[in-house]
Image 1: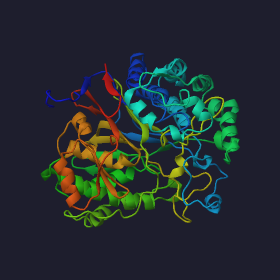
Image 2: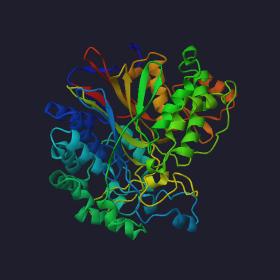
Image 3: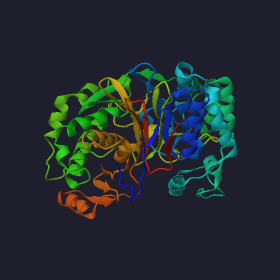
Image 4: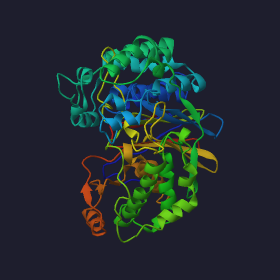
Length: 525
């Protein structure tokens, strides 16, 4: 139990249904859908789409999503890959010939076909109860009428205006400036798109006037996207991958997501006696940093479109974890084995919903960098993701850019089981940080016995690009000790990531937890 004399959050407890996400309007909309007879899938789609106007720098219908789903009446978990592909005409040779060594992040070459809308429509048809029109209704209203900008959203917006270009500046700036806390923001063009999707389904987005608007914008800037690329977009149902940490099974989405990286970090950490370490001390932060460096190096070499025969089994094997753990010196930091390949980013939303029948949905939805590519369509204001920046340009790399391929993705939904029973859908936002964040959240709960809210609240650190970022929640002497081990320690310029979780107790009580680093909350009824 937390000390009530200190700032903090209590877990939210309810029995009939629960949502945890990063904005209160989205959480409220999801609960309203549950109360109106919808199930967890209907509610998760409603909240996720609404976040496109509540947190426009983080997500939107020009982006991708992934989900893990546990159906009511079963403890089985299935996955949905809603990530889009590179245009069929895209080639790495073209960019190499232009002198690029990486995909330019603010160019149409980084824009993969948005996959989220197809996934939302498909998941609604397969597993929803109400239909896509009812799930989109709350978002349509808010996109039309606008929402007051929340404090964390304004904080992120203020540092991201330079990425916006062309029509995006008209749609996403207020007289040329970032929106500030309390100012009202609307996306009326996207409201119209959502109305068309509610009426005609996914074809209203991927064909006809909306697709023509997107194509005209991308092609005018030099993109090689085609009408066939948009019309042929299709999500893929998947089988989750998993690993065991302590007494819990941790389930992740398979590649092209980076969930295997989180499982590898946990496997490495299990080789060390974390329980004997201070959860917020230097020793634990050091071991976690070293495990992260090694696991991310493996990720950068291996994770790609699953059609490339990705070596997931190698990343998940006990032998791999043993070999990597043996490289860690408890008394000295190693250099980064290889630099991370993508630019720093942290723009993602995560939503989880559990309904009265105990269907559980873990859904993550993103445009990659802050305001994605910075490119928006003229008529409808659809902001495009820049997921293509996740491709590599090295010839022969499994994640090399090629037409029709899906890039390595950073966004990863999570689910945890114990004794075969689903006990916690969860997710950690924060781009690169996500696998590290999954490992920290799970080890906080399993190793240190924290409840989900305490596990989310705790201070974080992250080894990235040659430095060890630490939040101000760490004691000064911890940072000093980490520096003495050879880490280049810096205070994180902002909060590291954000997380949401719902714990399903055997008693029937649902326990929701939401990260105070965001504007959101857990709500139940």
